[in-house]
Amino acid sequence: MKLFSSLVGNWESHVVHRPSTTDEKGYVSKGEATGEWILQMRFLRVTGHSTSDAGRLDYQVLFTYDKRQKIYRRWAFTSNGIALKGTGQWNSETKTMKCCASSRRSRTYVGGASRV
Image (cartoon, rainbow, N blue to C red):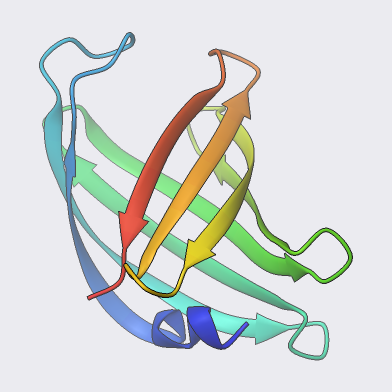
């Protein structure tokens, strides 16, 4: 869970969303979030909001590490009704997370994130 330590506290976000099946052009959003450890530091909860040309979006995300499966797990919930669940594998050499997630509205997608 040390991997998520940088998400603890208050921070600002600037996200470039790539074009997808639900948004052909892609877009940029900016926002604020707060991360805090919960349930004896077994989960990290991030609560925040972002704004873009489409308006404001509130969200909550839970992160944890599954020791038995040796994968990271994530659940995200948004004010526009999206609920995502996902898993990820951390590559310590490249400092990237390969993620796979699915929602009620869309098909499964694979993406990645890197730590700066």
